[in-house]
Image (cartoon, rainbow, N blue to C red):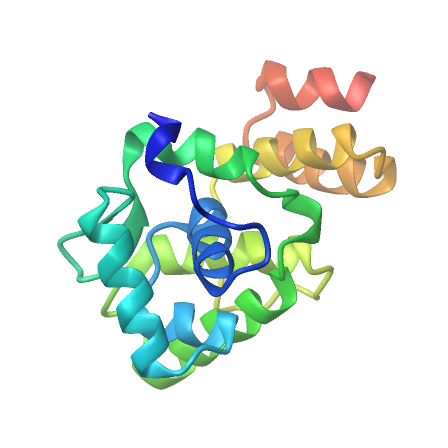
Length: 173
């Protein structure tokens, strides 16, 4: 499966697009463009090429996403902790402000929450999280040895789901 990802050079524009979508699929065109800083023509060419190689697909909202069989392989190409979370958070916030949540709804708001947490920004009323998001972030912060953040997010998860074994496990560690 990862053969489809061959030829993606680590610091190319194509890699920048793939990195953003590997961790935040699905995303609207405007957010990908804003987060990568690419011109509309360059972004359109890259998206078209990645779609033609079956790396990306377009969902029912017209958002771009990494094809399910390639998500994990795409994520392994990049360091989650060096992904431009701040740029992505700002692009998502701009999208929500400009367009609202009619397009993308919960998906966009959940991505905004994750991006803001990973960029270490204060929470806003424009984002939403689910217990699974909180548990995943707890695990991510734990593995990065950011124990204070892991505890903070893990406690939020347990407030919502007191019996969640995964969140409790990372808090105990």
